[in-house]
Length: 357
Image (cartoon, rainbow, N blue to C red; front, top):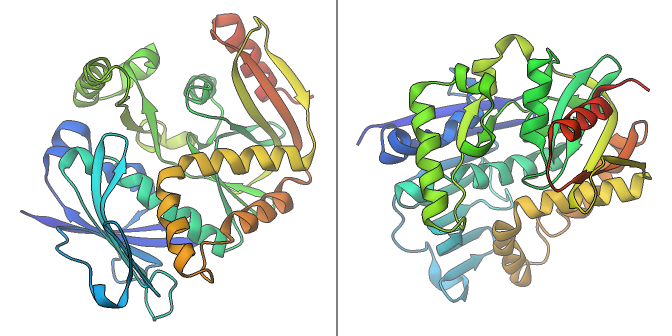
C-alpha cells in the first residue's frame, strides 16, 4: 500500500507530521480524514514537528515490563499504550512515545484501526493541537468565528446548536471567515482555524449543494443511510473544506470583540440574549472544549494516576487562565435558541451575531 508523509503548520504555533496510507477505503468512501487540515499543509517536510502521527499496525507495547498496566493499557514514565481505545462505534490501538517531551524531538503517536475507525483520527490530532497551543499560551476554542465591521465574533456551543447554519448565512452574506468548528485565541486576537465544515444531509443548504462535488454529495447520502441504520448512534457527516469553496473569504489575526455561548432546545419561540461575566463565559468555553475530548482525556487521567507530574494534569487550569486573558476586552453573551430554528429564529440569531450595537 502506498503511504504519504504530510506536514502541517498552523500559524507557526503548531507543527505536525502525519504518515498514513495514501489510498484506503476511508479515503474513497468516507473522505480523507486529513482534508480538515489542508489549508495548513506545507510542501517543506523537513521542518521540526511538535508531534508526529503514524498510521500503521501496532503489535505489542514497548518495554511492557517497565510499565504500569491497567487492563489492556500500559503506562510508562514517558509512554502510553492502549489496546482497543473505544470512540463511538470504532476501535483504535494507540501508542504514544515521548509523551512528556523528556527526550529531544516530537511526541510520537502511532495509531491503528479499520478504515471506518480512522475516519475519526482528526479527534486525536485535534487533541494534540489543543495541547500544543496551551503550551504556547494560546487556546483552541470549539466555536465558529466570522469578521463583522466591528471585529471578530465567536459563536460557541455544542453540536446541533446552529454553528453550521450561522456560518452558511455568514458566507452567503459575504462576511469573512475565521473558522467553522474551531478558532484560536492568542494575545487578544482571533486566529483562523480553517477546517472542514461538518455537513449532514438534513442541513445541506441550497447554496452549498450547488458548490460541492458529486463525490461529496454521494457521501452525504451515504451518511444519511448510516445514521438511520444505527438509530442515530453514528451520525456520519461529510467534511466540506471551506478554504476550497470560499478561498477569498478567509481572514486572520483580528481583534476578538464579541462572543456568544449558545444554549439550544429551550422551551421558547424567541431568541434570547443575556450579557454574562468573564468567569461564566470562560467556564462555558472550557466545558465545551472538554466535551470535545472527553473519551480521549480518559487515557490521560489514567496516566496521571501513575505519573502525577506531567504536562496533561493541569492543562485545563492553564487553558482557563489563557481564556481569561483573551476575553477581558470583549463583549460576552449567553444566547438562548428555540428548539426549532425556523427562518425568523435564524434571522434574529444572525442579526444578533453581526450587528455592531
